[in-house]
Each structure stands twice: as C-alpha cells, then as structure tokens.
Image 1 (tube, rainbow, N blue to C red):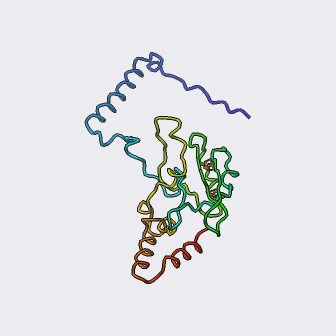
Image 2 (tube, rainbow, N blue to C red):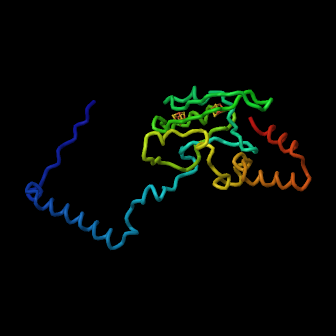
Image 3 (cartoon, helix red, strand yellow):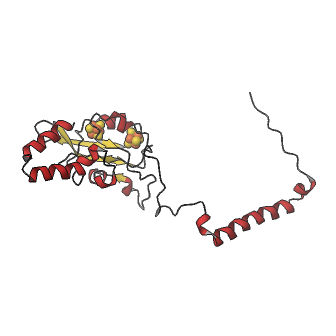
Length: 204
Ligand code: SF4
Ligand code: SF4
C-alpha cells in the first residue's frame, strides 16, 4: 500500500526564499572558512594517495597464494572461473612439471572492471589459492587494460604485508616460515628434499 507523505507547510519567511538562500550560503561559508582554517578537520581522505583503513574481512583486490618455492598454489581446476557470476576470470591451464600436481595455470586473468567483488571465487577454491585480503579497496587506473590483472600481478605481494599467524602467506618466499626453513636447511638440519616434501604435504 502506498504511503502518503504530507507536504511540509512553509512559513511566510520560507516562502520568500531569500532568508533560506542566505541561511544556505552562511552554512557553505562556515564550512569553507573552517576547512581553510583547520584543514585537518575536513572529513575526507586524500584518495588515492591515502588509502582508507578497512576491516580485515573486507573483500578487496585478489591475490594468488604462493607455495614455498614461489610457484602458484593454483592447480587450474577452474572452480573459481565456473563459480564467478560476472565471468571475469579467465584461466588457461598447462601441465605441471610436478608429478603430484596435474595442472597449473599458464595464464590467470581477472577483469576487475567486470568483477562484482562477491568473493565466490575465494569460496569455491579447494586449495586456498585465491584470496581477496589485500586491503586495496578501490581500484584506480588510467586505462581500461590496466584493470585486467594477470598472474604476475596477482602474485606480486610480500609475506611481510600479512600477519605472522597467516601461515600460508608466511610459507611464501620472503616469509618467516620460508626463512626458517632455509635457515634450517643451511644449518644442515634438513635437506632440500625434506623441505620440498613438507611443502608438498601442506599444499593442495
Ligand atoms: S569476486 Fe566474484 S565477481 Fe569477482 S572474480 Fe571473484 S567470483 Fe568473480
Ligand atoms: S579454484 Fe583455486 S585452484 Fe582452482 S583454478 Fe581457481 S584459484 Fe586455481
């Protein structure tokens, strides 16, 4: 049923408009003077130079997770591409040189102009190979082509940008676990084969 909203009754002064116009101008001038006198109080960000602080759960730019040897954890199963409602993921698979893994992505592209940031690709992945936890919320580029993220760009992240308790991130090259594994190996505690075996058991 339609809801009827009564029209506000205007007083004689309001019907003249001039008083209301001057009140509006006074408010505008007040904000302009305050912004000039105290710029730190302006409730805006110098975006994109200053990125907004977002909660950890925010679905932001994607990244492809890495194994301890730096290769992608993705096994090119196409689950994310199939689940994607925007059809913005394009994967081309190739045979993996690793005998225990059938396939790997030769190319992995996401068109962020089509993406609706629903997170279904992350949910669908059986290998925790794709995440949307980079904290880069709003994309700024100067050409349409730059919005298509390829595999190199999706894998261009550092373990140092993620918490120490994020084990899978820390397993990647440069991460704490990777450094510990390398130090242990160099100290003669493990062989390269042992480290590779551990990495294999922990990955998809
Ligand atoms: S977030 Fe949603 S729309 Fe974007 S790539 Fe993933 S599944 Fe597709
Ligand atoms: S669902 Fe995961 S493992 Fe499968 S293709 Fe997508 S990112 Fe790769």
